[in-house]
Length: 321
Image (cartoon, rainbow, N blue to C red; front, side):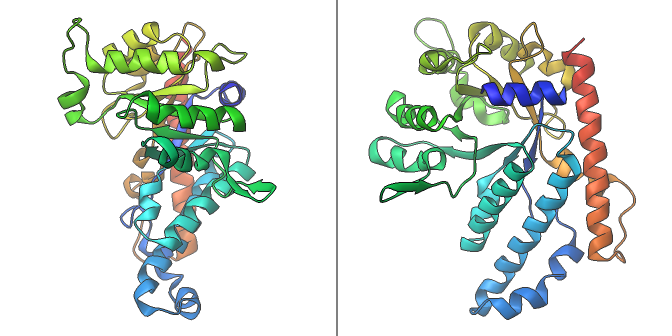
């Protein structure tokens, strides 16, 4: 977490770009441009559409990364978007993480895993890498992953152990931004508190042995931007827990709303935007069906860069005031 905090300080920008491509977010010209290349390289015709889209995803992601790498400190690819395409999609996920890491970005893998025992330890391979005899390698290229705490301490300890051994981080779901989260997270407890508050206390304790130079542990928390008052209260409740804050922009969260999730020094949180940045080209008014693939990618890059700059400036005004 120290490295993430330092990357944020260097960029003076506590924002992370979610790399969550979908067929609707990638210009059709880009997908079409790989038709011949994929058709020649894929043996099973049934796999061609997924493989073609996967290759387009990587080109799209690389364009976004190149456009924002000097603005943002981190990216957050959502693995579900890639797994939906099968093996080709998983390859593109790892390639995307590796490419982002090569550009000096902190890579937060949004995998939301949660299990116990040997299964949890296997999932934690996203952090520890893959052992092969006396050596190991890291196929995932992630600096952190998201984790679901529903199974309790048994489901978290293997991730904390792997993160500690590999000098990486985890972010545990605490108060999420989706509307139906209240069905569970706001349940009243016998002591008068809420379920998410109890989870928050657990997260703070899970990271207590891993506090770094900047005062935050390697066990972070996911706290949605759509719950500003609760987020501010959680900031006080979890003084050593770094927040990943989704829900900015498209889901209704604002920079002013998330300001209370930062500490007095303007640290302690990083705010995510996905569609608002990678889909900014669709709202630019400059897109034309007649564009070539290169022209469409150029628009994707310029619109994403402008949106990332706007988000950075918005957060600077409200967080560092």
